[in-house]
Image (tube, rainbow, N blue to C red):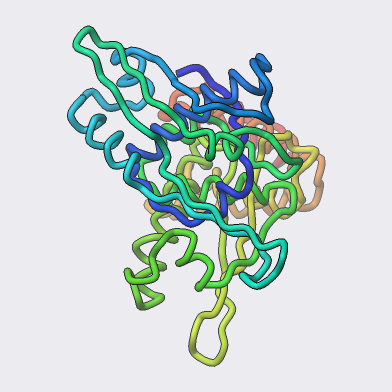
Amino acid sequence: MEETILAQDNRITTARYELSLLEKRIMYFLLRDVRNKFVVNKVGNTTLFDDLIIKTTSATLTKSLKERNTKKIKKALKSMRLRSFEWQNEYPEDHELHEWFEVGFINYGKWKRGGDIEFQVSKEILPFFVELTSRFTEYNSLIAMSLKSKWSQRFYEYCCQWRQAGGFNMSIEDLRAQLMLEDKYKFYNNLKKKVIEVAHKELKDLYNKGECDVYFEFSEVKNGRSVESLKFKIIAKTKGVEYLSDEDIDYYVRTQLHSIFDTKKKPKNKEFVGETMTALRLDLSKMKHCYKRLETTVKKMPKDEQSRYLRYIINEDYLE
């Protein structure tokens, strides 16, 4: 699948719905097609939508979705027709500006014997799939498609939505509502373990490998002994080191060095990393230089060669 920067209205990012991992990948596929038609190529009048028929082939779809089992894809398409997408604005029901909206993700799916596929997206949901307002979320389609948990998919979108702000707060009640988990994982610790930490681990692991552009850290806000809300901090590196905070640069360099030198299993390496970080913190320009070196090393050098190469670089350039 070609890399595409997708854009979706933040009403989708924060809407109330639940999709499986495969259904969500189908939505990304739909979103890319819709955006290419109405945003990139500017086909038609984007304020007067008709129902949109999207055509593709089984070979293209299975490759894009990373799923070769056509029965699973057909089942996911059927489920998406029945799934409810629900959104309402911030005004209460008795307010004149109150707005409420519910629709299925697709109207129908059709799979022909020769491998041709088509599905129809309702005109009611199309405006949510393009940049109709200045409030939208951008994310990388390759990353979104590669995620292995539906919770990672949603939290990746949250991270992208709040990337520029650097973080966001969300009540546990709102999080449950958006993910349709009011009746599941009723105890916070279960929600944390089964949903939040699953997303956190996958996004952070991919970020540290250089395969994801953003991830989150979170802390709990309590009322007495109960957790009422969460504070999310967004760590992103899409715009280059000059846009990152000193704290984020420090965190990236530290975690990468500990990972590359396997300090959990090799205590002597832990001392070496500690000495390196002390030296880098005395000179921010060296810290930024090391950050760039690490990014290049992780992306381009075989893993089994990274520690030997970086030890030489660190000794020559940072531990004089």
